[in-house]
Length: 438
Image (cartoon, rainbow, N blue to C red; front, side, top):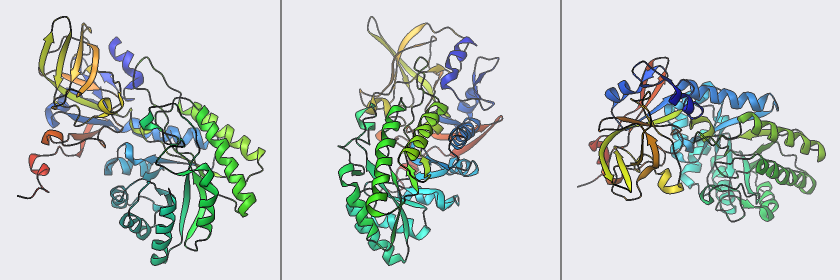
């Protein structure tokens, strides 16, 4: 169907329409999924997930063999997805004790687990040390002192990277920029060598590399090239001033994904080509040994693989102003429009063959005027009970979800070759009050 063809760039790889005009993902009819699992419902397509993992590995490893792709769990993680990433040879970027706990549950290769965060607690660091995570990315001077003490008590030599704020503006939303000078993350560049000196004084910390993360939704490869020049310049200074040959450079993630049909983004191949060619050139220019390159995509792997599915409830038409179509989800399962001004597209999942004749505003069900998922979107004539699908909902929606208004968070299913597997139950009212005391 022509309507579906327009949406192909932002839908999962397996998206199709059946004879009834229903959206199909992974061989599963979304109308049938809504009947079986209820709505709101988040659907992840296994083929799209695996294709994205393989694409990142292929595009970086073919151009620069000593590359490691690690998935940024904060975009969305659960045991089923972690198992897929394990099978596809990726590592994990974790930022909490909870994410470490999940990695342990699936027996993830610990040498491929990198522990980030600007305020890791002593308890979390103890968990990381006792399990033996591959790398701890040290974020500040306080953490150097704490980690040295804990590693000494544990009788362990922990391999670490230092997170550096390289002072690069990635030209994204201010809440998504993390590599600028005024950031809560990392050592400002003028303090970097002082941090190196402190780590080298420790007998329980082994400095093996540097880390920089510029931010999220970065649409151009130039900021990565600028960061490489800054970071490799620092690698050369560490060699010259301390006699230490660093082994690893972690360039973070932040690769943009396409959320809207008319706004294409650079391909993984274009990012990989620019990054690896610049890296090779700088290594030669600065006479450095070959470093391992680590990249940390999250959204770019999981975003397009996920689709949110809602059911239409009430309709409110204000003549000459706006027509509101209220859905059974919204702010509670996807706060990104309210938080970042994120703009989504929408399809009527049970009416793919019908003409888009109405401009409506898709409103959420939560008691906030700002609970609007999409303003002014063209859709077929809708009625209560119709189904609305929001593509590119795989990243950050569920991790940022809440129980606002004491509403349960949605179920999650994984679809593949006509089979749908429940990978997270819908919360119940009992779940919401399980920790509540009378």
